[in-house]
Image 1: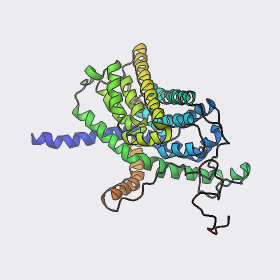
Image 2: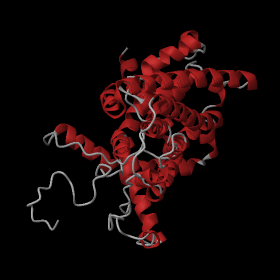
Image 3: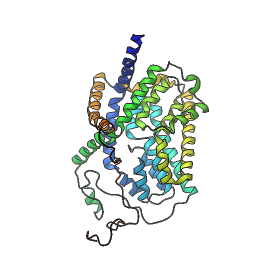
Image 4: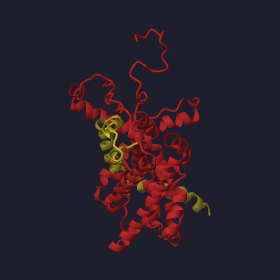
Length: 70
Length: 322
């Protein structure tokens, strides 16, 4: 019984550690690119490109929103 | 996210464009695409941004059909310099404005954004997502969820009910989805969670009503739910058609990374997590509840039509040179 209670947090930490190992390199890669995108593609730039179109503005807003990390 | 959209609307974007932006931005981002590739598989990595794009266009176009956008002056874009705010871009010619900073300075600013803004915004949520995923992995028996959430419309609806009120960002929802798939949840049902989780939550609804109106918010929720379920069913069909077991292939990308690089990655990630986590802990335990600041990178612009220096808060006799 006591063994189980002690084992539980160890298992949780081990599982979290495994996910962290699997993902950290990709996370770093993702946030680095996202940071660079934030310099080039500011939301202000998005607004400047939207225009007034009834449909084109929607498509552009949707398109710009996909990579933006917000 | 919401302040960014609110400010987009203030800069003069129509409702359709604003709701499209409100959907595609939280549902996908470069950071979450990378995490999806690491923890899920290439199919989900491609479908997630595609579903976000299609959902956003559907909601936006519907909005502009139902409520024809008013035609008014040009958009008042915020052109202030993203590197260090050295110039507000007003009365500054394009080719001069573009060359305030060299490529080196821009890359340095990008790295700073990556560590402080991008990772700083998600680190707390990602830690929570990681712990929750670990609990699911340890506590729930394998194949346990296959009975109820193994696919079909009912699984999708359950995931909608869980995902819509939940507040979680796209990156942080990914490890949870991976853990769910390993426990027998169908990839389509997991996708519904990945789409509905980040796009809405209980507190954002009031802000949404402010930006889109009550009917607009209802349409937004209906389109969001409908598209999420449709893409969920489509993804389950696709896995079945290709004869792929999602539980067997997820996380394979992680094996491409050599072990030493994985440890190095964790070390760097933990190192850059110390500051934002410490700041968060500090805010929660000590210190009075300060004003909430958003690091959306989207400074509030003056409302459309108001020229610089004519702000309503400035009386004519203020003496500030008007």
